[in-house]
Amino acid sequence: MRYWLILFFLTFSAQSLAEKATPLSLGIFPHLPLYPLHKRYTSLASYLSKQLKHPVTLKTKSSCPEFRTALTQEEYDIALVQPFDYLIAHDQHHYKPLARKDTPLRAVLMVKKDSLFHTLDDLKQQEIVSPPKLTAITQLFSRHLKQHHYTRDDFLLKHKANNFDCLHAVLLNQAQACVTAPHALHYRGTQEIHKNFRKIIQTDPIPHMVFVAHQRLPDITRQRVKDIIINWGKSPEGKAMAQQTKLNRFVAATDEDYNILRSPAYPPQ
Image (cartoon, rainbow, N blue to C red; front, side, top):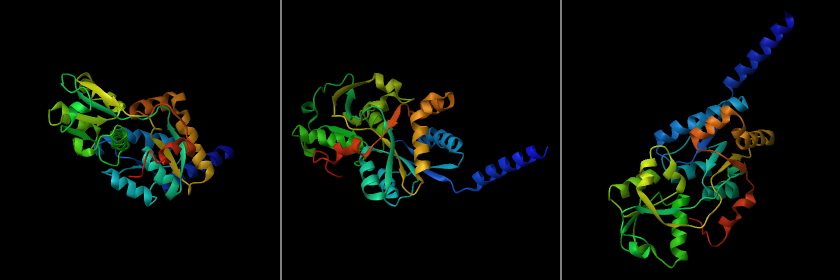
């Protein structure tokens, strides 16, 4: 009887300490509007909390510049960042790579299926919309233009808040083409849009989004978070969370994976 009382006390005490512990902050780069982003990634914060036995709080910002500022202020303990923000987080602000998506990232230029435009030359002096300037997708497209000897003045380039606004602008004939990410065409709610679009170009690939952790976290905690991310597809609960958040198939990341983005071909934005 005494043994069970002691065990109960220790278990209750551990739970109480976890509840009172300072939550770890999980930052997600704002690639979606705020409400859909929170709706999607709340399950990720809950999953990490359960696996770590420590509270994790989901955080983000309403724009890419604000999120980048939060990174530079080292606001997040753990963060999911786009490739170009990784360089800033790691090289200047004490974040360490944990795991990256196992597929490369490209930008694609899409037009409506019944469009008369088939090449970039066809789109000269036409309106092309893209996500905000600092997003990896828009930076990849800008590099593609330079590689192929185009300038921004060759097109009427405008920015929208996110991938979905870009797609809808073309669908509503408010623009002739949109720059987006291939995976945006497969998100729930855009399947019908995907049927209405045709790809004109795709850019060279770069390493995809990556989870990072601040070095203020103990090594053992960073390793634990890394192991959770890499292995969450191996359990029914983890697989369900990954399917809901579209965070399937992550592999261990190293800083060297992102060296290509440090080359002169990818100047800082």
